Image (cartoon, helix red, strand yellow):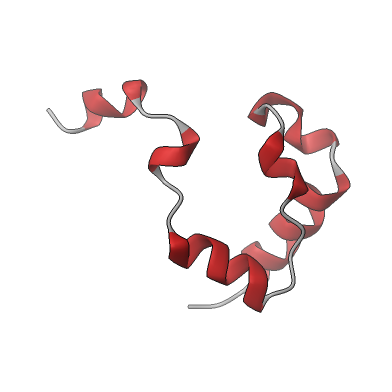
Amino acid sequence: KHISSFKFKILSDFMTKQSLNLFSTLKLGQNFLCFDPEVWPQLEDYNNAKEIVTAVRV
C-alpha cells in the first residue's frame, strides 16, 4: 500500500533541512538540484556528491 504512493512523489518530498545540512557539512555542491534528475549523471556537482556520500559510513 505504501510503496504504490512513491510513484506520486517528487524529489522535494524527500529533501529536508537535514538533507541540506548534510550537503553543507560535507561541502557538497548543490547546483545539480536545480536540474532535472535525468541529467544529474552528466553534472560534476552530482558526481562529486555521489562519490562522497556513497563513501560515508553510517
